[in-house]
Length: 61
Image 1 (tube, rainbow, N blue to C red):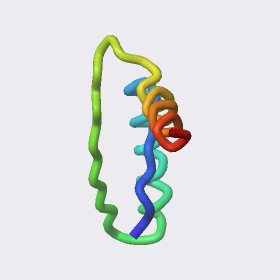
Image 2: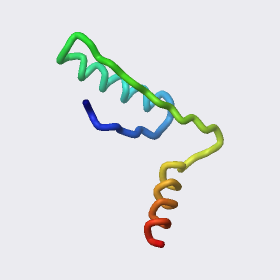
Image 3: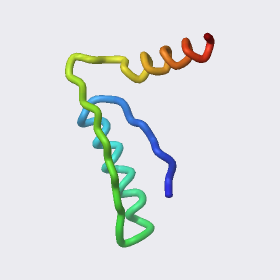
Image 4: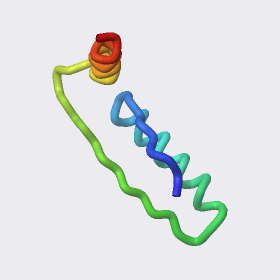
């Protein structure tokens, strides 16, 4: 099983990466299984960076 990965970007760009990764893995077998989770928040940007900043602030005390 592969580790979890987080992709952040525009819809078409993210799904292009998913498509290409699926095709690359599919070359090695007859079946590819995907589990995708999307957190779509219109009007919000930089959420991953903000989460990291809040975590680091908590760790720093």
